[in-house]
Image (cartoon, rainbow, N blue to C red):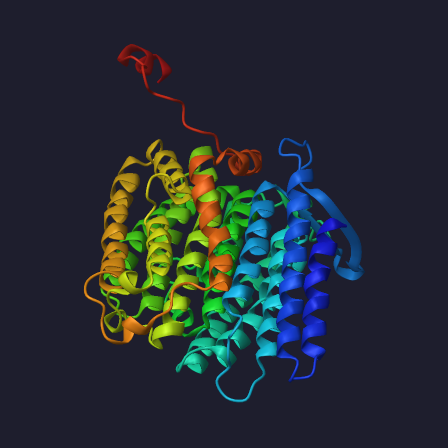
Length: 507
């Protein structure tokens, strides 16, 4: 019931905000902020009540008959993986609302529509992470495209219509493939139900698994996105309004990597093992290719979008390495990437609001004029490059160590991406924040109280979880271990201290 309440709060808020007169913009903002904070409060309560080592796969479950003829239910529940991602949504939305307080739409559209769409998107994201019925998951998976499409198309940059249509068409193509796979799963399983737990182990034929896996995988790879399905993200990330970009890259894209863990591995274990080498290659290519492209970007928002593609390569690497460390690191990476990239997008939004441009060359010496802004920009950048002491370092380290125990070559090549990350982030900080202050920068104001409140919680969490990641990892690990069991995978046996004679005996 608590999950339903969590979803109803932003849903009711969205309806109320949408029904307000166009002139009541301030009230719309206040209601949106109140609804998002209330949702965060419920998420905190759910986190406190969650039992990490429960024998039940899902907690806080709710199930009611939805479409009887299909055996589909409106079924909700969370495991440790879903819980931390829902918590990420709940943390990011209030920050986005504060950062977007003065958001203005191009043309005549009322800003209240922007805030109503933010709350509606929050509803869809909570639904997609908590659905335990495959058909219901698909409905939320497709429905969340609608508010994001209008956020980009109505409130984005000069090429917003192109970016919105490209985002929608790519996602729709993936959704259609997944719909075919969902139908194939239902028919092939012969269970007469879409309940996720009932479908685990239901497909035994290897060829059927491979076909259904590809339907789900391509949809999730587009959403993540993994190379070569990534080309929509730089356009969407660059043209989306700052708040929309923070949620698009910070949370919505995590639905893809969440889908790999929740659906691809448990439902199609044989196919997952078969296609794992291909996914690992794509992940490593994505890490290096996107990092190289990021180094050449002059548009700050496109640069952050490309860095995210590289980060998703690390997440894919951790998932398909099939180790507990790697997969736990990948899930933790999803959370940390959402916090760090969300903060980086929001601080870039502060910079754009003052300078009126998203081009790197239009800034210089900002830290001399606005030291707090410069400091926050540096912290957000350092979190993106996974500096030790920040939570992103923990997750990246776990992914690489977990991958190295099974795939040394992939881990070694992926490590080069860390060097590239340092180059493109430090270049961005150097060119915008340091050096002589250019003429227009001299008039910049430092961070306002509202902007500081939007950014401080995200950066505080990055630092806190970098020092003490145990609370989140303790929630994630049992769910990861259960997923590993469903995928018929186990961690490789340790080899440290094993003699040559023992190795020969084991063989």
